[in-house]
Image (cartoon, rainbow, N blue to C red):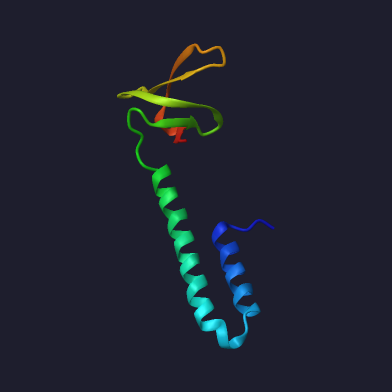
Length: 104
């Protein structure tokens, strides 16, 4: 069974509250709930950052994987010109359609 990050954190919160003695549960629940909220906020902000529009100079990668590249220029109708350096140190330039790229 595959758990999402959110459901796994909720499960951990539930089990942790059950393990704490009854007289300490309220304070512990507030503390753990705050930690959970902070974790989820960070996860949400990271997802927002990944889906921002690409700008020149951003580090990108093909959705299918491959080397990390720098988005160089956007040409209307043809996509982003990206460059990277191969193992030998040679600069490689290729154009990719924007929908094929993710921020790295």
